Image 1 (cartoon, rainbow, N blue to C red):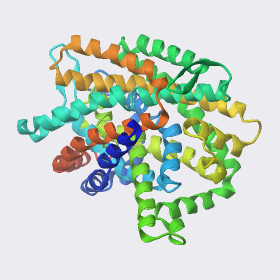
Image 2: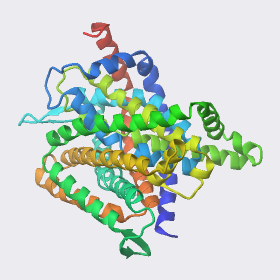
Image 3: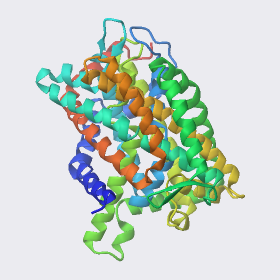
Image 4: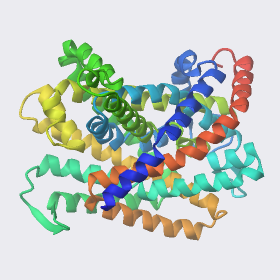
Length: 473
């Protein structure tokens, strides 16, 4: 059995029916207990983003949202959607939407609880996240679950979302833009040729990451506040251009997505077992990639949210839940629809990752495709770069919890993180994404358990806040 085959088997176990059910049930329970907050209070949530924050904390609500978005808007929106469609068919996009709709309530609850149970250290800095939500909210007897979350969170940063997938996506996009035919080979490793575009871009990203993360949270937040909104606007403009130019094809694309999601394509010529497998593949890839992209239920965004200058947990929960809408229901949808509209000859062409998305955009927009590829590369580079920064912060906070604030260990970890970024370009796409899926699933399990246990607290806090402030104050 090869290493990749072993990873796939582990992934199938971690992302089996129990984990998928746990994540969806968590979102459903929280939707019910908050009375559909993602539907009834979404407008208020967007207004709350730009309000001036008052209270204890290190960051504004907008800065915390940008830090969280910096960790979510990344390769998942461009590369992750492409790999989901390749692995689970167009129907994977439906399950990404389904998980995101329920996940919006999950994101609200986990960020609200992070503010409620955060801890202010003697030097005035704040540490919070699911580890403290579990320890303080569920009690000391559950500290082992908090420790498990922190361990998995550290691993996700070092081996999953934070490093390998992001830098691999960056270097892949750069190569696709500047040397798609692999004419300038720098060296070969295990039978794989690596171009100078990959090597040089990998070195540049590693150096830039090192310069920023040594500066800590506030430097990361400042970079995220500037880069994330600008790149999101560029990508949304590109995606809207694709959809507007092909507006007549959108209904057919939606029909194909729904048919694929429920196995209707396979029913005509397949046995029941094959149909069920297609549905499960769509669900697994769609939900797994959706969680990878928007991180609802993963427990990462609450770590940044806990540092916000506010004394109202519900307000920051509202702000952060908009991140799931922006990430998956807007940006991922644009990518997925563009790929589906481009047709089966593109997503069955053998291309993968950023190359597939670039090919879809280029075909739909027309022209020689070089300008589209360059813009897509630019968006992916900056999206992924900020994701690397955001996840360094998340995993450092998990490690800080595990070591009881031993910053010497955290500083060593920073250099290990930089090393992981340096070697990320030389890993295969399939291995990188499978490792990310596994670590994500392991991190989501303890967080979702705590959210279910504390759903009563979520309901109580939510009702209390809206009783006190029925309108935006």
